[in-house]
Figure (tube, helix red, strand yellow):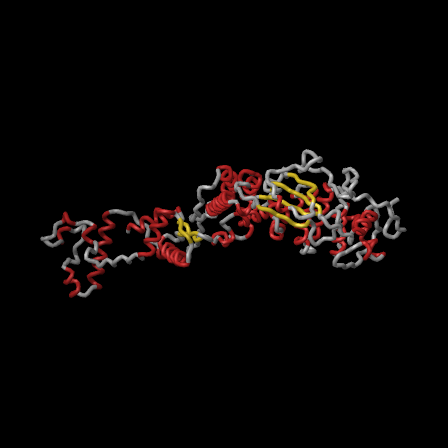
Length: 537
């Protein structure tokens, strides 16, 4: 029967300092089990890659594992070095961790506990029992409320006991603890982004992306080594897609004036449409690794944690930088702009962004597939029927059959009213007999030719036509350049000029003609014909 926190302490024999599944070491050095998809083909000699940097090997260090990850396209190699100095300060922690591993607690209420570096020896009798009981529940997937010091203690235990807690199980335990308590203790994000990555790299375990996908943006915000998590993305949701786009896309949709007018629930259409695109991009090794530059990460594992010397090591990783791959940036930028254009069309917005030539047919198809159902269900804008007040009906025209006789009668009546209202001297100046009408040709002056009667005769040919406003030379030159090239770099002068152009065309066509982006301003292609006609006037 396993001892409990309230029973007598029974100290099992201290386990050998090695990983489960490995042969007993004769030289006292820690060896790791060959487990997981990333294990090298042979454990006799480390799997070498073509990227070798002998200058990075520190004096006295010994390389004990080298492999090339298979599931993360961004990582080119992982190399582990044993630290030359052996410190014994935390050796006792690992010994006690092995003893406490099989112990259990009894149900009890939470007991406060605080320590900057929590250890078993610091626990009182009540704290020990609560820790063991809380740990029992956590192993079953039930995460009770507790102080953060209990969390750190259990995390240290998992890190320091790879022989008793198999790494393929330990990586899931660490990820679920992180997910369960990160909202209560936000500082966990800072440490766990490092510790979980080190744990996976050392023990050749893939990142548990299915557990972490719900808070991937927070991970990428806190992680210094983002490529570890990005390379394992399998099915990003809209939040994960947005986190990836914020790193690699040159166009940030959050700055779009159109997107700012939409409520958050409608903005999600853009990210949901791009989620399968981001998944496709992250799985395309030829695309994410389309650079000759290989970056290097070198750090001591589990920095800031309580870690025994025979578990701690130095991790060296060669990787392709996700945010410094030019073609990847161009492809994602084009996909974001195309998706926003689809959303603009869905909302009835005529203005469009200039997408560019890097939009692939695959990504276009994925985005179109998302928006197709939305377009099919979109209802045309219905015109509102205004209720006409009763008094306005009095001003309606009297129903009457249209005929030449009625027209002549109306014409004669109007001239009669004119004769009564216009003074005689003004009437004489007109030179036209007031009694003349179209239906009474005999009343016309003798010199008047009836063949000249037409609508043209009644036009005010001598009216003064207001001169056209002179076009601004700067606007004409800038629009002509945009018509030729489609875009221009954003400067203080060009942005101010775009504002003047948009004010002008808002009056002419009811919409803006130029879209101002983060680095460039673009001509809205939908209005190219209107702009050309305006320049020709």
